[in-house]
Image (cartoon, rainbow, N blue to C red):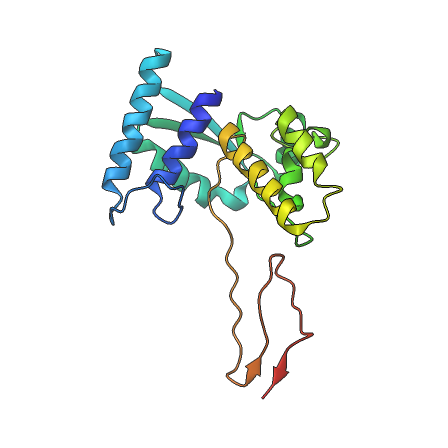
Length: 209
């Protein structure tokens, strides 16, 4: 299952031109990416002696359009994805107790630090007692994460965060789909209005010409 999830991570990077993983081709129509994705799936089936791959993805009705899109895209590379739509309360409970094989989820930071996201994979935050809904556990990750608590040097702290990020991608407890983008519109005479990682409206340096 771990290798399959890693294969899916690579495939989604390959079949979506808006997601850069450093392995996607420069093809404008993505056709060569689909070819490589199918090749990876074929190799997985051969190595594991499987005739077909069947997965179940759980979500609530609010994101049906997204999971149906994923379903259609995976069909193109010979992966059968069934969709399990449940009430939001059932989804929350299932995520906490590890009931679901795969589920769609999102995370919005409430303070501007990478720790906000990386804490999702810290073993002492295992759900239901914390936000580690993937139940990911890795000793190397935990030690590095804990080392950031006392690291005051921002440059060194950032390097540790990059290593933690790479460990998440390497072990693949998640498959990143997309990142939200924020745009702010203002009149031409407004200066100093910017965005920030947590999408807070900060008017401290905003002024009118």
